[in-house]
Image (cartoon, rainbow, N blue to C red; front, side, top):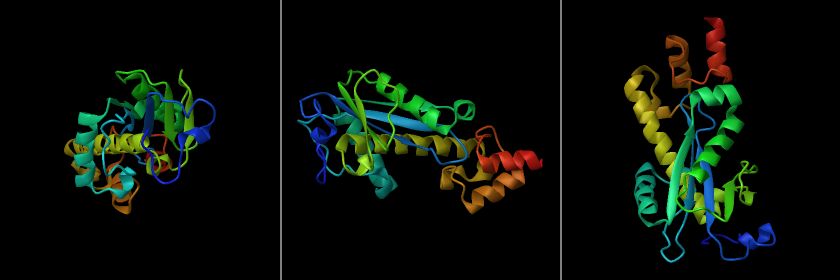
Length: 207
């Protein structure tokens, strides 16, 4: 599996050094006050590497879009899934993120033999999985997943902006920027806001 820097999957323990279908998994949208959390899973094709993969946060929107199309065209398979605002409020954001990741892995056309996840937690999967801190900057498949998840999440935020233009979702993507908080206090939460998040809950309590 392609990787960068000095990270080697065999460092994860026995079995990880063997050839296998390895899926990278990442998410986008844990921190925003609105909209779903999105996860992606990607199995890259070692015979057709994709140049320029990196943590989605360091790429421009235009470059992310370009790489997203290339990943969808050249990866062995990929899948994007989400957990809804209702699930986030019911389960909490961590458990909703794990749910979205499970859905993304389950959505892959090919069944992976191993899964690597960005961060320090792994979702409850039926295949061996490992968490890699800053994996989106170290392992190509996780980088690819971070790009797919970010592009999909941004597209969903543009749709939210079209439905609720007063909040500016197209600009801040749901994050608690000063502009977003001002709009939230002025207009109250819309249907896309996460009621369990403190700034949204505070506005509801005041009203």
